[in-house]
Amino acid sequence: MKKKLVVLTGAGISAESGLKTFRDSDGLWEGYDIEEVATPQAWMKNPALVLEFYNFRRKNVLDAQPNDAHIALAELENDFDVQIITQNIDDLHERAGSTNVMHLHGEIFKMRSEKNEHLIAPIKEDIKLGDKASDGAQWRPHIVWFGEAVPMIESAISVVRRADIFAVVGTSLVVYPAAGLVNYSPDHIEKYIVDKRIPYVSSIGNLTAIEKPATEGMRELQKMLRRTE
Image (tube, rainbow, N blue to C red):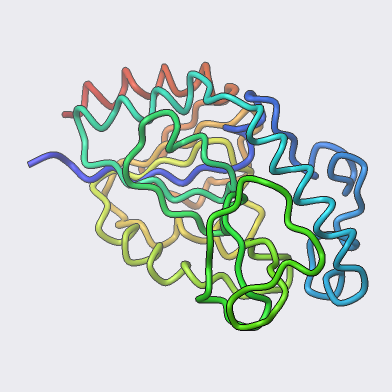
């Protein structure tokens, strides 16, 4: 039986593929104010602007390629039962070859009815105002916006509780509720964090910190994990 390796990933792992996070630029995301494009209030106020922002991001993701950190995680499936829980809305984990990926904050290549969160469809092109779901409601990005509940968080907690090894890659552990997942990992298991700026984590036991960018740090983590098999 392979050990269950649960990995929480964040924006830092995709940043090296050229996908920026708003935290790199003083609350702006590619020139957009987060309050104006990534909240339910923004959608009610100016849905056209919100769609423009996510259409732009969708193109960015289409142009991006998985990097060495994504590939290293996919390769770990040879040795471990890997479950990735990602805060990222891109599909770079899947394109790198990871087969078990849970997206906490939604997916850029999906859209859903603004009235029915369970009415979801794939989308690679732009979403336009007037594009309607089968229930007659406007399609919106299948994204968990700031201020919205995170539907997958309970499933993620359940997965983390069953981990034999827990790792955090490319996240500053400040976006909740995802950041709290580490607290649900069993006390006795080995835990690892890979980030270029390690947050304050002294309260977490059995923790190995690798303060490096995701691509460099994941290769190091890969070697460490293979020694634990």
